[in-house]
Image 1 (cartoon, helix red, strand yellow):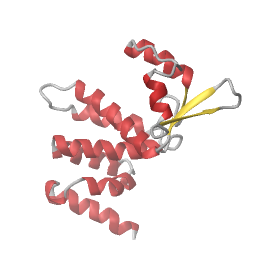
Image 2 (cartoon, one colour):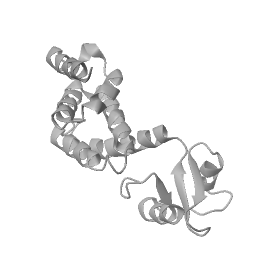
Image 3 (cartoon, helix red, strand yellow):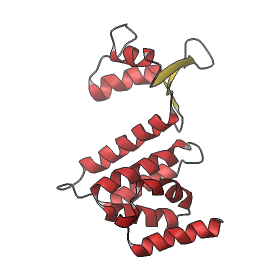
Length: 171
């Protein structure tokens, strides 16, 4: 979905990627995992796109899609760590590339908020680095929306003042 800047993906691509990346045979049979998930009408929905042959799948709930995007990105970043220590530069680069498509795929904003939430559980210094990056790159709206995920007593007094200053300028 991120690759195509879209909230829909062709079912054919799901089948192809499942075989390549997971070694999983995904098909439309009644007992396949994909069919069971699709039929729950909670996570994935299918619909024709321009023709009955071209079927696409999408998440039913955008918030869940944003959570899954963040989980995927965070897992990729975290898998490259040494003893649980994240590479701050890699983290910033991942978020930077994610936000480059925000005008075409607005869901990356929500995904970034979830990444901030993940970072709170790791180390607050990562949260602060990401917040400073977001402020410097004029993405303070993400900071404002994600602030509820960050306990006030965990961030530095200086950063908290910086965030409050941004809020006051908006008013």
